[in-house]
Picture 1 (tube, rainbow, N blue to C red):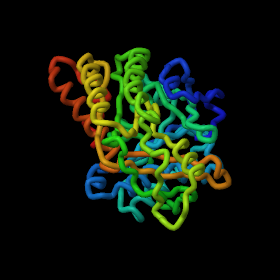
Picture 2: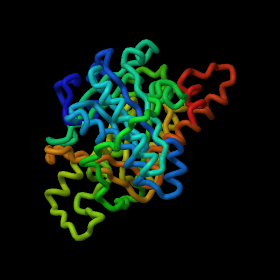
Picture 3: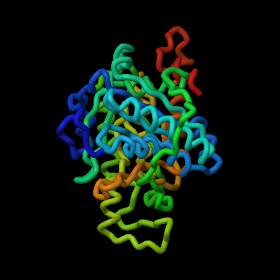
Picture 4: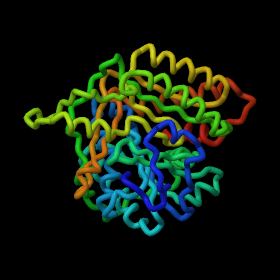
Length: 361
């Protein structure tokens, strides 16, 4: 995301600052929230279709930005899907983009892309919120961060069959100009590429989660380049005949979304096994206290999908995920862990989020 007139004017260039719940501002109630995710993404990834899953996941961002005529709206890439927010007058553009990318995923990638649309007001009527902050990964790349539990709730509703955008007869081929996968997978330089998801339980106070998230970040930030998964001096384009100079590669790495807040921490990092074990111990203890759910997945390589908006080459954005399952596998582990915790508490009612997650896939 480059900017948004509904977003806070200030963009924070230090990631730890967007962990503070006070920096988030609510979206207007009539705004739309769109959600996409690849159905059975873990099976597709298991068969080696990492790039296809990520491309399908990022496709709605490119399609909507090109249709809307601007990438001036909040969005987040999630590996096997994406989420975005758009003003109420964008309902036609949002609906068309969702339908078009679902048709494209089925026809060209042979993947089923689940797509849904809901208003912020409907989310608030169900006890959650959608609030955003802005994180400046570099001078030319600013990403939206989401808080309030609204995206998480909406995703679970859509996975359970509510608020789906039904396939139409007039879906067109989406305009995916600027979306590409130009780079070979990036091997870990420190041991393992980690995909990590950490989400607060509904009863966890935001300030408690923020303190925990900062403890986790402190472990990773102590490493060179803050555990950035892209090496500062290595880049292997798929087209090996195309040279990549050092300043250009530095810009690409700086503009990547390896750290984000999306109703919780979502990280793609290059770590040592010791770092991962240390963080896992912190998270296991927090889960035992009933504060969080988490999932992590270790793999050998990271993947990058790129978006260069037409007419704005300086605002190139780079979406990162793990090659061996990434966020999809981490989410699968998180759901299994949450259900296991619930099954050990038979006298405690399962709250809405876990119940819906059980229905979804």
